[in-house]
Image (tube, rainbow, N blue to C red; front, side):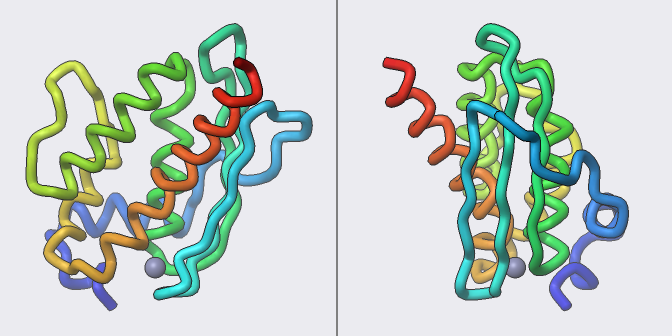
Length: 148
Ligand code: ZN
């Protein structure tokens, strides 16, 4: 299992989110919804975001799959709450940079998501972590198109 090969600190954070996932379950009527799969590993994830103006009021997720994919979903729900949609887009961008070995911009707080940076040593597993931000990006795009 890849998680066991990660640095201890990262491993603890990932396993904590995997065994005690935060903000699980559908949010009825959420204007932003998206789901996706990572067939390489069998991961599935769905997100629901409610808004207060342009800010995320609540973020929930549901899914199944490996520890990395599910921990990423849980970590994202914690980081998304209270962010504007623009800040969410910046967070997604920061995570892509992090996975390429670049530091996230100083003004973006990635929180526990930083622990996923340990996964970049395992290219196949990057897709497990990236499932979350790919799905979120789709959800934001779709919402942006609807509200134009
Ligand atoms: Zn996976």
